[in-house]
Image 1 (spheres, rainbow, N blue to C red):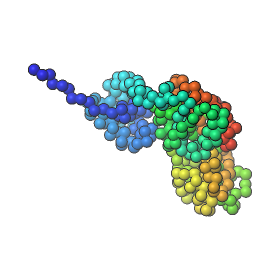
Image 2: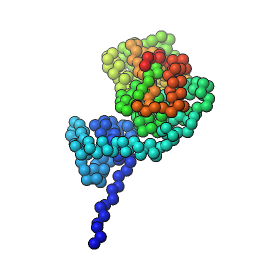
Image 3: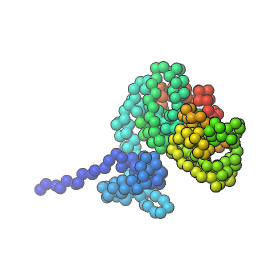
Image 4: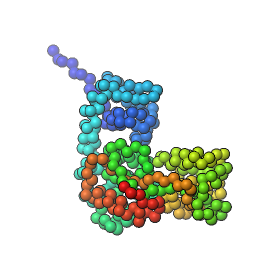
Length: 312
């Protein structure tokens, strides 16, 4: 008599990575942000995983997501296996990477502003090292570093540093951006309250810039202003140049707006946000990546030309 074979499982690495990430964050939204997908896509993928293995991994309520006892036991076995599998599938991104080649993921806004000067300085001082830039939205940068696909990441004040070690490079403030002929174009600083009633051009990127701006506007009672939300610093600068409002951008964005006839004027009181390097926690960097890390940290206050250096 032939014994009936159990049905084969169809489980993907993506589903397992989502499971581990959701278990860490306890939030479908935050897990989705890390992968660059929607909350509903995370929920659907986890539900399909549960259906496939016939196990309930999470208890879901309107307020929270919690691992079941089964989920906790599975997580303890799955998490190290997922990490080992990713290390095997991405040998160049981990300790077996090409000698002299370093993968660095960078938040898009920083790639267009501060990173070129950092890379130029690195090439001059470390000519035997090639830095391969992975230009991504910030949530994707953090995920690339966590997975080991990028050894280093350059980000702006990330809210979640789980599994990551961070080194502050410099503090960067916010600036009002006005056309060269604007009535505020000749002042050395602008008080937030001077923006009351003025049409505003706000940067809505994925680094939390909009949240920081809105918090400062609320704190200083700036109300009644029409707000345009734009995703590119250059768009904010161009619209300010055209006299369509006062832009608010990080000071570091000035380098990405060189062609615009605008003035970047620091806002007072200052709203500093830290630009930092990140890497995987408890994982030693390869020699070439460690050299790039050390160079960026040592030269941050000299090379960038924006913000102020901050102590680690």
